[in-house]
Length: 109
Image (cartoon, rainbow, N blue to C red):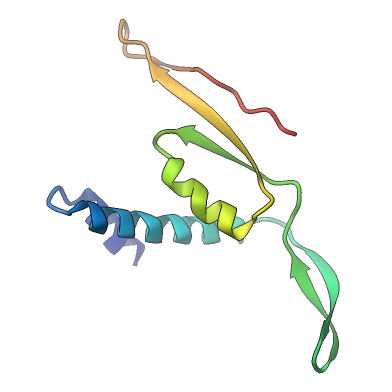
């Protein structure tokens, strides 16, 4: 599916609703794949059938977004980890030499 969503994003004839829908789908997939690589702690939970262990989301994660290109990715990460810290990096192009340079650096906290 990711190839279909990506092709739809690249289609110059797609309308804004199609673009947003496919962008959201691709961002949710990317967030799920990325978050699946994080280490997960286990905790005791009580189920209707008794005690069990289950995963608990990590608490020491920071999502860093590169403005504006990755802003669409922020929502799915925040949905998956509601308490996640968020940082932003701004990259600007120097019009004199076309080289990129950082304009902001996130701080943990």
